[in-house]
Amino acid sequence: MRPMKSCISTSISGEIRVPGDKSISHRALLIGALAVGETVIEGLLEGEDVLCTAAALRALGADVERDAEGVWRVQGVGLGGLREPAGILDMGNSGTAARLLMGVLASHPLTAFLTGDASLCRRPMARVQVPLEQFGARIVAREGGRMPLAITGAGDPMPTTYRLPVASAQVKSAVLLAGLNTSGKTTAIETLPTRDHTERMLRFFGAEVETTEEADGALAVTVTGQPELTGRQIQVPADISSAAFPLVAALIVPGSDLTLTAVGMNPRRTGLVDTLIEMGAGIEIRNEREIAGEPVADLHVRAGGLKGVDVPASRAPSMIDEYPILAVAAAVAEGTTVMHGLAELRVKESDRLAAMARGLAACGVRVEEGKDSLTVHGGGGPVRGGGAIETDLDHRIAMAFLVLGMAADQPISIDDAEPIETSFPGFVELMNGLGAAIGPAEAAA
Ligand code: S3P
Image 1 (tube, rainbow, N blue to C red):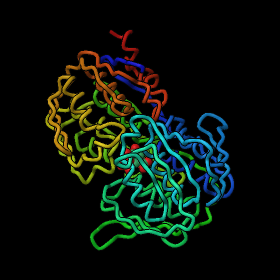
Image 2 (image 1 turned 60 degrees about the horizontal axis):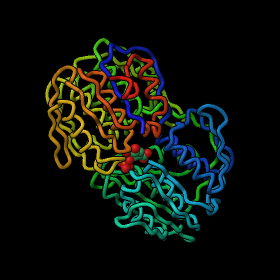
Image 3 (image 1 turned 90 degrees about the vertical axis):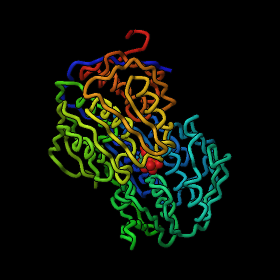
């Protein structure tokens, strides 16, 4: 446990590049391991979540090496070439690592045992178990489809069409990845568009992936099985879900002026930027470009002027990881913000809906927690603060409240900053370098 305290900050300014995108990093390693030849990845996120994927792939027979900071080399084993791991695969805190890997394993005829930390072992895996069993995989999990679990991949997998009951890029990706080593066409149908990094990266490696619209407006994503995947050079953009924290800090600390460079701007990920602009944020999108099949831009942010808004449920998939930090922005904004369609927040690294409602209330913010909605009444300036936040192994809850502490009259403390290492190594140092005052809880009284 690493308790930390965040105190009110004077303006922050500078130009920074946050670590690489977590979703893209996992996929680059996974698909690189299934390709023929060498994949070189630059800007890989070296957070614990992604390191779990790297370690699991090594245990499955791929050669995954770190060359230099953020530069990784993967010698792919080729589709179908994974070997049975001798030990248990520990996926740590990462739902993405666990669910995407289960997808890959579902069509490889070997048995693997997967576990994770206390948070991951609470999270639902039935959402991937159900479609993966349609391919012929056998999965034995704990009650309620929880980890630890055992998976035996199908020797002769059957191509599947699966309509997602929840908007989840992890479930969609698990289905598509299972479809890779399956002859014929595999289709995942989603009613709300979720992040499409798997589709983009599969195409980038040479697979055929088609997206078509169904009569009811749903999107059907089809992968043709057993493609020739060829090793590639990949540059990973900065993670918009990590950029969100300094970005909101710059908006809520008066006088701030910050530039975030090379941020991934995949349109299925930019819901937070759209919402903050609607709230009146001064965000300029500059130097738009594309790297390795993904759109990227620099974001220039100036403090001030946030007003409450209504955030529709349809926007949830494009900002699903950003609600904790949006709730922080809403607490400092003038007026009420209502966020709808948040049921999925209850099954993230923690129940984020409850955690935000509880934490904000402890900091003197008026909030209402609905079944799948959150209402935050902003005071148009610094919050009272003073709360002691339980982070419950959730990196984004930890970072959100450290940012709120920067615009709070009394310091805000969190019980544990360690989970931040899963997605944003160096977060505290980076924020302090910009002008934040975050330190050990004992020392910062
Ligand atoms: C992710 C998808 C999202 C997101 C997670 C990363 C991915 O999860 O919350 O942090 O990389 O596919 P769901 O698919 O469960 O919504």
